[in-house]
Structure formats: structure tokens, C-alpha cells
Image (cartoon, rainbow, N blue to C red; front, side):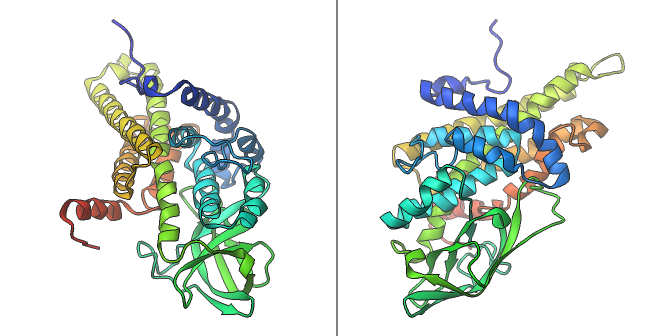
Length: 387
């Protein structure tokens, strides 16, 4: 009888093209050889491994889905696989790539002028210019329109006042994509580090996404030239379309986290002996492992089909909500159960489960909470808005 891959029971890999398999293998090697040796200590010290950025850029992982401007021009499934492998290392590493690609490069690529694209995208693809995305505010949360940041026309430019919170990459970013109310509707602006009145303050004391930079942004009479306004979108469609792009990657990333946890606990339960036999010989352990494999398999198939729909131009935001809800919940539950199966050893960063478990507490909240995505599907089923 053939032996199945314990983290790919339905041979989902065989459904990938040769190019997609090559991309996954390339990123997996980078994760195994370069990222994983750093992530435990990075999480423990609450530091983002900045030294990995040039290597990620060299591999074409930043802005991978875009054509031109030094970007790799890969399909959506390939971007998903990149996210899956990066999050197998740590959610903070995938978050960095997601913000750079989907939340910063995407709006410039989609809503910017040719001059803006030429000015910023090549440097961002090369990892020489880091971006952050300013939408969330302390009072806003799941209601992004409830923002107090306001941009007012002033001569041939704009003056922005307000603040943003929970901003990934904030203190290491060279530019910030900031969404603000205006008298003409919600608009996006590219703020540059060093603009008078623009300040980033790092948020400390986090117990989740510790190997990631999280900041608050403050705007006090920040003057922004018209050349830094994204002219081709007005309204919530702009930021929400960026979030849909990022959520797509998040449907894949937690699969990598869950695979990391399951792989580790399979090895651990095979090696650790209690009461004269390996832990893996117990029915209770095998049932829990089997359930993890079932849920990972379901998530893998869901993510792949979502990627195929996206590549065919047929992906719906509601489908992204369903996949984000399912896959992050899957990964968080598995990380928690793996932490338990590791016993006391499971609370140290020598094992991956506690790190993934704590990170996923943030992943299940950002880019739309689990409840929000449940209500999105409820609206899809009933036609009634229950927000």
C-alpha cells in the first residue's frame, strides 16, 4: 500500500502546474534554510528579521502577482503558495509580504498614475522601499468607514489630520498608503517618511505577531502634494479591494502554519514514550492527528479552488470570506491542540506550536474578524445585511 504524505493526504500538489510546484519548492527551501532558523529567536526578542527582506526580494516574493516594474508576474495560485510557505515560518513573515504586495503595491498598481507606478513599484519589488497600509483606527475596527482621519484640499495639495492603529510595518516603512475622508469621498494618499507632522510609534508589549513591526501612525497637519494622491478610485471600494487581495493570501498562509504544527507533533508523538509505548500509539492521539489532517486537507482544497477562481477572474469577495474564516479557524484550532499534545515543552519557542497559536490569534482578527466573515456569508445566503 502506498504511503500518503501526512500533510497532503489528497495529493493537492499534483493539481499544481510544474511552475507552481517549482515556486513552492523554491520558497520552501528559503523558509527551511534561512527563515526558520531565525524565527524562534525573533519572536522571543520581538524583532522582525530585516535581513530576510533582500532575499525575499531577490526571489521575487514582493509584488509577485504584478506585471512589469521588476515584478515576477506570477499567477494567484503561486502567490498563495508563497504565502503558505512564508507562514509556515511565521505569520509575521507572511504579514510583511502581504502588506508590501497586496496592501501597498496593489493600490499603486491599480489606482495610481503611470508616474506613481514608475516612482514606487520597482523599488518596492526590490525591497528597497517598504510600505505600510493605514486604514484601521482605534474607534473603527470592523467599520472601516468610521474613520476620523480627514484630508482637506489646500492650494495645489492636501493637508491630512488624524491617526491610524495596528499598522504592520509602520516603523520600518518608507511610505504609507493612507485612506482618509475628504469632502469628495474617501481617498488614498501616499505619505512619505519624513513629511513634517507624520509620525510612527511602534506598539510594544504584544503577545502575538512578535516577529512583526506593529505601529500607530499620527498625522498632524501633514501636507501632501496632489502627485501623491491615488486618483483612480474614490470611496470604500479602494481600501476594501486591497483587503480582498490581502485576505486571499491569508486563506493560504494559515495552511502553512497548520502544516508546521502537525509535522512537528507527528514527530514528537512518535519519539516520546509514556507508559512503555510512543504517544502516537494511543487512540486519543491518533484521532486528534487524523482530525488535523482532515481539516488541513479541506483547507488546502478550498484555497486551491479559490486561487483557480481568482486566476479565471471569477473570484467573489464572499468566497474569500468563507475561505479566510474556515482556514484561519482550522489553523488556530490545530495550533492549540498541537501545543497541548506537546505538553509542557509546548510553551517554549523551541517548538513552533505556541508561536503559531499566538500569531493566529491576530490573524483571525485582522483583515475582517471571524464574525464579520460569518455575516458576509449570512448576507450572501439571505440577501439581508445583519451588520
